[in-house]
Length: 205
Image (tube, rainbow, N blue to C red; front, side, top):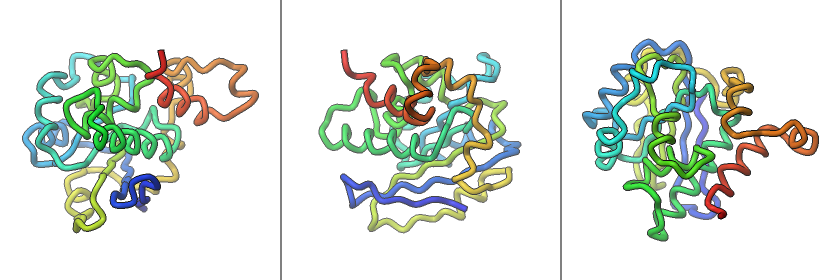
């Protein structure tokens, strides 16, 4: 059900992804992350939610500084698991080179999913909220580490599904709007191509 991949440029790291739907405890998951009970960054790519229930950005950024390498995403805005892998790979690259735009590796993953360089906006758009019902969990870990996946799974009150089915949860219209995908682009490439291109080139002036 989960997907584990080695980072090609950083073979000492692996990325593990888990996907859940019908999640009933997003509020608890968010609080666990803030309190360090879930050691990771919470990401919510979905824009279909009430803004007043979003976690405070500054509190969230401060809290994830102490987390291990985990990200949780609400998967409505995720086209493919490769999108998450690109964000994680870029975060590790910038972390190793001391060029991160945010305070930690985990917040950098969140930031890298966004098509813009506005950090606050990235957290507002991609940070998990109380109303989320689909969660994509991403763990970056050293190959020498013992990863307790079951411990993470037990914290989620939801139905686990295969990561390669993430497109079942995708809101294509919202993705096209956020990443400003023009109809012409889809004639020469896929939606995933367009999304990853925006993520990869947003630093280019």
